[in-house]
Structures are given as structure tokens and as C-alpha cells.
Length: 343
Image 1: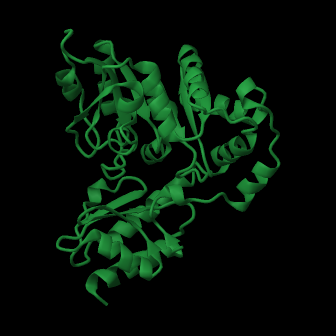
Image 2: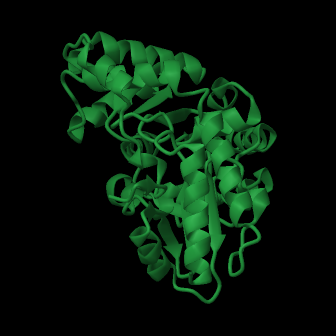
Image 3: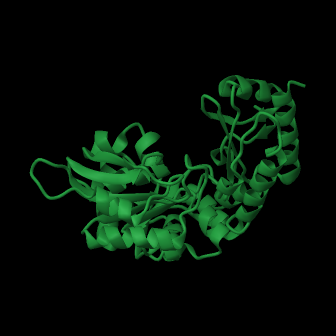
């Protein structure tokens, strides 16, 4: 394993203190609502997101898939950005599981407008898919970790609701966004019919996501959770990690975002590198290397002890997180500069 792992914030490992909290967790059967740690975690996240109830799930992808199973019927249409995770990186799940049509809007680095939503809504006709859901991804991963501003998200939600559509938020990095904007997560959560946060990215937990919504919605989520095998028994060991993260790892997301900015600034003047500094808004940095093969560069950089990702033929991605400190980010940038310069 590379000594500096900037491949993704999913690479985080539980800290010793988090492991201790997990070891000390009081547990019960979460399927019967008898696990106190799971119950507390769900209550805290629901309150954080401004929703009545929440449910603990194994992953964020499952949160997206179950939400679409609840919101859609076969043949219904989901509007999302053309770069969104739910469209590109979930194995076609909404189509395979919910039978839904996914339509990608041509947004700006992962964020589309209310006008685009209104223009995409199909007229009612037995010949056409029924437009049912608008899905926002906060932050926009393939958009470069860019942030939905509250005003733009509000306008999209308002347009969706006016047309009778359901609003879903893939909040995998919602807390990175609210950290960058200095707003409460509920400001976004209240815009949505369903919204979730990931525990296993910037919050540093080993596994898990929490999906929130209305009481009726969560009842239906539980039906699907049971149906697809998502019940987890004594899940308090995992939920305890989430509770620890909410207490200790939310405010420190600002460190990751400062480190990402520092990394981008360290590479911006490197020959053979193209970085749009305006797109570096949270803990993700994309940069292009015109004329050089991204996969070959990743391999050469890994030989020097730094793990990053290839996201296209000439595009690389770095993601900062709690397992990589400022000094390591500086070292990684220096190594990448050396590789790109051939030294």
C-alpha cells in the first residue's frame, strides 16, 4: 500500500479512538429497533438533516437505490446531472432494480438549473416515461467536488415540487459542502423528500450511510431494506463509529478542504498540468495532463509511494481526508511534480 493514499476519502480507516468507541458500543437487534447506538445515530442524523426519521444502511449506493425503489415505478424517469454518481457509478442500479429511466442533464460541473429541470419534464402521455424524481448530488464528485449553492438547490427543488416531482439528494459529501458554505445541513435537507449522508468518506467510518425522510418514506425504506437483505442485526458496533464521527470529525473537514486547496496551488504552475482552481471547492482535486497517459502516470506515481486515481485518459484525481495530513499533501504534490517533469 502506498504511504500517502489520496485515491479517495473512502480509503480512511477508523482512528484508535473510533475503534475504542466501537468496542464499547452497547448493541441489540437493529432489525427490531433494539440497538441503542443505531437508534441514537438515526435520530441525530434525522435532526441534522431536518427530517422526521432516518435509517442506517450499509452504503450510500444502497441509500440511492432504495430511495429510487420507493419513489419510482417501472418506467418512471429520474432527472440527474450527466456526471452524477447515481447515473454513472452504480451499475445502472435504478434501471436494473427500480426499472427507472435515468436522464442526464447537461449541468455545470455537476449542478443544473431550475430552467433545465422545467425544460426536461416530459408532458403526460402514455407514450412517454413519467418524470418522477429530481436527484441532486452534493458535492458533485465527477464535477470536481463542486458545491451546490443553497439558492440554486432551492430553485431546483421549488421547480421540481411545482411540477409534482420528488426531490432526492445524494449527500455523500453533503457535510463537506455545508462546511465550505458555513451553513447547517438541514438547510439542504429540508429541501428534499429523501436525503442521506455517507459515514465512510470524510467522516472516517469503516462502513455505512444514514438515509432520512418522512415517516412514511422510512417505513417503505425499511420494507426495501429487508427485501434486499440490508438488515444488520447488532449494528451498534458500526453505528458507534458514526456517533463518534459526528462528535469529532465534522468540523475537521475544513482541514481536508484546506489541504486540497494547498495541493492544487502546489501544482497549478507545474508544466504539463492543467488545474481549474475555481473548481477546487472541497476535498477533491481534478487535474489534466495533456499528452500523457493518466494510467501510466498513476503507476509511476505509485512507485514513489503516492496513490491517486485516473479518472479519464488524461485526467487524474486527488482526494484529501483525515488519514493524510498537510505535510503528506505537500510531499505528494512534490512527488507528482517530479514524475510529471521526468525527474
